[in-house]
Length: 117
Image (cartoon, rainbow, N blue to C red; front, top):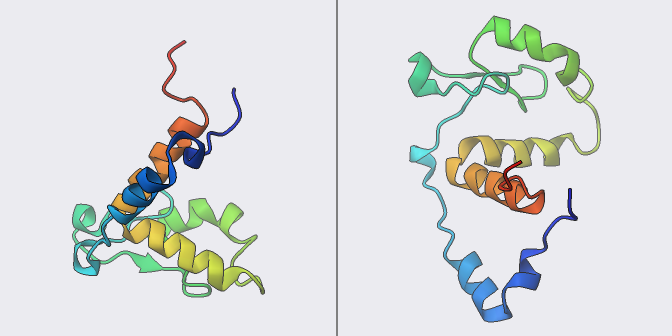
């Protein structure tokens, strides 16, 4: 695996600025929550996704998904310090499919996941 790619090294300042400026803010009304465990969206299950009642940073479509995720989630649930920042980051990623797709694309490029074999 090669080192992560710094996109700023691939583009000149103007091209990088244009790329960043072209990213549109995703309208909140078009954003949907999805389950932290299985990624099902509210529209898939026909009802609202529920938040973790303690930290409000995780979202679950069912009690089963909440139970399955608890072993990992309990480590950060209610922890002091970065919880609010982590919650804001996670919420922005989960609620904005455009941002999530961009993050996935960056990871694919950074870790050369497009190379076959």
